[in-house]
Image 1 (cartoon, rainbow, N blue to C red):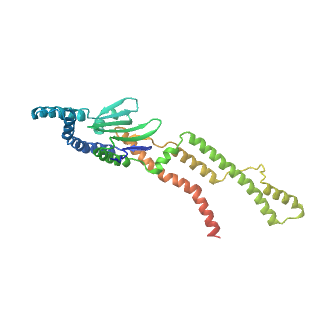
Image 2 (cartoon, rainbow, N blue to C red; image 1 turned 30 degrees about the horizontal axis):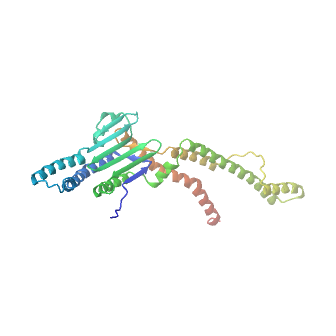
Length: 324
């Protein structure tokens, strides 16, 4: 019979800021789900025992007494197979290279070492009968929070996956923050900004040169083109038509300096987004600081774009069409 298999793996990217409250919610979620998962599998044991009896001793004509003995033996074996390897272990990687092992984040938070070091990642492994869960947060070459639950064709495992996936989605960053993290290039961002600033400088110098010849043309028109000024008028027309750049002393306007300063600040803000922070021990304060910083960025960057690009364009439209 065809069987529909649901995906039971999910991964989210940086920035990943998991607060102490979220870690507590994960502990509580597992504490509530695992007993029900054990009960669901325990109810399957009688069926599995009968299937094994039928497969191994069926048709051999065993007496009821001997069948009961085998039934108890198989029940013990199956229970050991299902629950003998049950475990719930949490490995927390510390920034100094050491590792802290515990059963839950609450237990790990009580360890004095997390007050001296910063958690840089974790691996949570849970095995409950035939169901296994792997939840890992890492920040090496790629920052990711991954969840993998198996088997995917077992309904209680899928129910556990659904609950854990909702938790993962609850700590996922908004879309704009994920794109920010993907597009940030660290120190290379400053080289890119220097290149853009130089292009803007060159464009402003070129604009200043053209403005110089336009002003000269306006003066000639206002004063009249007398015979002694015809040569200068011809030079001005040729310069404007050929985009000639005459070496002139040019000082950038206030807009350029505002653009340069605010752009440098915006580049510094965008160059280094958060990657992975865990709200455990010293990490609690770090998560809170990054969350406040993200709110500031959410305001500062749109303000930079509006003040440098939207407002100049809007003010120009107002002067042309509203205030004329």
